[in-house]
Amino acid sequence: MSRKTNKKEKESKRTRSIPKAELPNNIKIPNRTIFPQRSQEEIERLRKEKIVFSFRFLDTKHEAFNCGGISDGWFLHLFDNLTEISKLTMSEFEQQRRHYDLHRHDFGKTAHHYKESIPEHVLEQVSPENMIQFRLSRSGGRVHGIRYHNIIYIIWLDPHHNMYPDERYGPPKRYPAPLRPYEELEREIEKLQKQLEEKEQENKMLFDMMAEMEEKKSS
Image 1 (cartoon, helix red, strand yellow):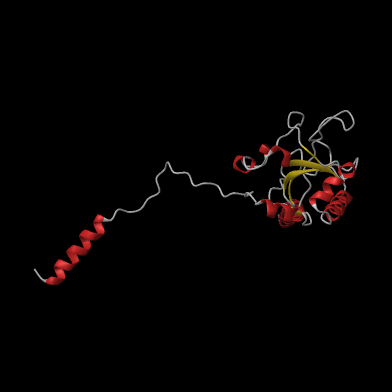
Image 2 (tube, one colour; image 1 turned 45 degrees about the vertical axis):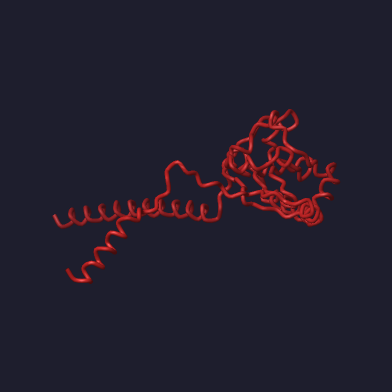
């Protein structure tokens, strides 16, 4: 037996002796921390920073918070308020509770809970006092979200006060969700396609009538 043959056999045995690495089925990969712990020094620094808004968890598909049935101007009202709030620190925002009515949720009185839109592993990282709401104006609706130092993660936009239905605002209101520009185009295309099919059917009927008339003339 040649040296080359012995070398190949040894390499083959070595390869067979190394098992293929596989991830056991019972191992769970931990979820990434969304809200990491901060040092006291960093917390104090962040409280001096201006508020920023995150739309990472925004849910506009929830039937109670899809922003249906409102005017376009409401969105301008929303962004006007977000713009003004973003000029404040969290401490300053808290001092204006009277104007914005900033407070934590009492989920024992709400019609909905964040768990309807937010994964459980995310909510487990949030303390109840940081699940907050604030109003745009007395009749302009509310914004519901999670506060994390100087960041407010917006979850639901609530122009109809569906989170806390009461006598002032009446029962929960449900409206079809407004269409996005591409959805409006899709509907317009469907409408035009239907009109085209109808015209094609009309043309076919006319051509059939003309052909029938020609046959009668020639007979």
